Image (cartoon, rainbow, N blue to C red; front, side):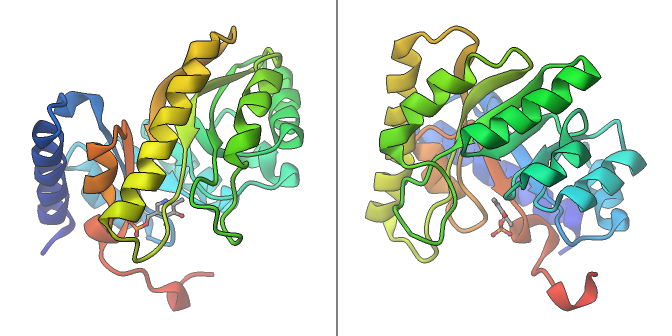
Length: 232
Ligand SMILES: *Cc1c(COP(=O)(O)O)cnc(C)c1O
């Protein structure tokens, strides 16, 4: 299947999952995860009206954003403080903020550029030691602290489920992020919105939509398997 055909299939499945959950399909943004893919793959998806793209390496995001500034680039992978310069002002949304020090580095860069950078707080709901993200018990305090930074705006939460999770485990993780977002929303921190929940990848986006995802991040489901050997 071509990228266009796979994209059409994923869009259809998002629609079906949203309607099955009694949700409006329009409130779900599909982020095509183009990490490791050449620009030609992005072009193919772009011709099918795909606007949002996810990258996990800051350098790669910066290069692709420069080639296609009219597209919406999302930083979904871990971000180190010394790489902040590459993505602030270039990414429409940074999904992976999990410490105050990272938020402060983004604040500093955004202030220099005189912009407000939209971010999500990444939460480690699964509890897997290997996953990045702030612990759920510390998420509220982090949001409260980040809320005070004038050039950073929290738009919601992000999480990653575990590989091979069953329905019950996915329900626990995605449902957990949804409930945490509702709890934070209830605190009415100034400058903090909980409008976005970024959760769900190729193997679990339908479960994430059932649990309230507003952004799903799909890579292999659109572009096929990644070949890490070909990139450098
Ligand atoms: C790579 C990646 C994805 C996409 O994964 P697929 O399984 O290819 O859909 C989603 N989210 C994050 C954070 C990623 O790093």
